[in-house]
Image 1 (tube, rainbow, N blue to C red):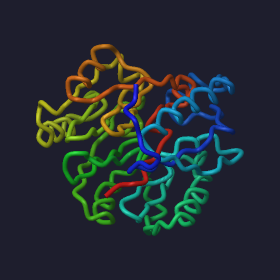
Image 2: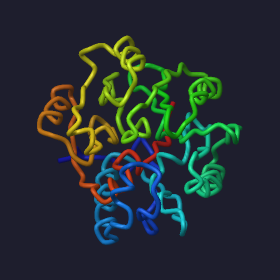
Image 3: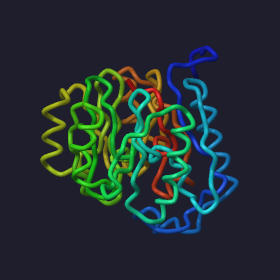
Image 4: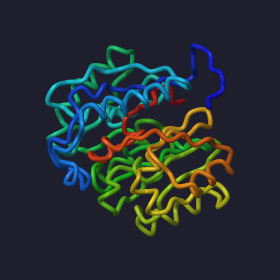
Length: 278
């Protein structure tokens, strides 16, 4: 399936083993359905399958899991990096706030400069802020987890144009659950997850032939919660129609079942944080 790869890859990705993962509380609609229903054996199998797939196209590094913090496995929410600068997330929900010092410690130990994000402004890292892959801008989500002041502050810290994205569907509580920037300036997204002003902004910024529209059936499979690496798109699931759209745009979809993590409202992208962003 994959092209031959060298031992070293350009991209480095942070992951966290799901040793303590489970749906132990409810902070999004998916968790209400999945509370207490994860299967530990399937969790390990699915995570390891994703790990093996990503290893073909990137170097993986790991932050140690912590007992009592089941959602640490979702490293997209550790923070956001640009070069060797990092913003550590400020979680809105008290259930996840205990993760912050562990992620901060990991960034510091790995040579990142920690930027002084205010304690009182919620911002949930690369779950709600995504680098466009065609131009120097950041798509910054707000509405459920990150504050509406976060996009402008992100622009100030990183010095890069930031486009605010207002999320309006609680099923898609983080931006990376409903929007995925792809190489060459393509954007895969589920329009009803955003308000009208955001949909217009996307249409104004992204040419029509670069917009890959996702329907609701694919959106609720978290097809947008994908990891793009070297034109491969790693995702939980996708219809034949969506996979064909991706192939027509020059991408290779790779499905990796992550149904156990969907019970907590996460999939491939949630389980990863890209560490090489320039």
